[in-house]
Image (cartoon, rainbow, N blue to C red; front, top):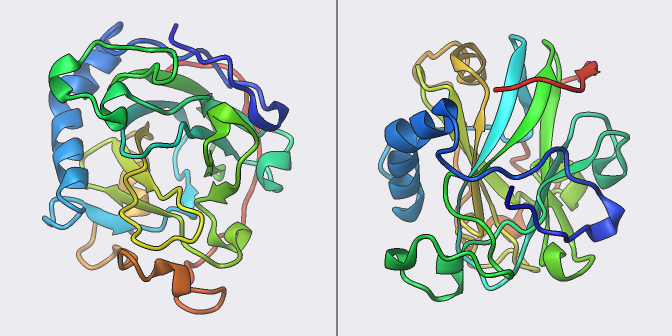
Length: 256
């Protein structure tokens, strides 16, 4: 358990943070998907190996036991990552933290060669994971980032741009046949020079759900990636994502 004791806005963790590679599912993520995800993100999401999807419309088309894996961070902030399925942002009835301190040592100037270092201010390593629980068809996952939340109640940014004053703060990517979705957040106050790598994480949804998010896996079903450095100019009604109606019914336990 690598849980930080940070609790911005009084939010509680949905489940403990477990160390990478401590069960077969996390081993599988590390050996089959992590490196390609990390390389794709570090390359600026530009090599075409993943398809951009709408991060604000992550609605389940099949029941799923969900899990979130930490992929990396690239910021001086100690951000907190959370999620909700009910309306209301961090005030939603089911809003909870996933990674109270979504920070790895390498994001504070250490080299990747020092993998294994877990100082208190940067407790995670890539591949650490959290169980989100079991969810039914129609549940929509909305993620949020609390900027520097491990050090206080900072600004809150959402995958749903309507909660950000119309500004896009996240990108998401999927592949047909791959059960994981990659999500990247931008934590900057003004959104300029956005690279969407300040917190990177993967969500295990299952192959049927990722295929559904890709529009059935048909070519051309993805959505455009926001242009770095200009995303702060976007406002509600100008290039905003399509929003789906939500049906909510959460089951509180389960494994991924």
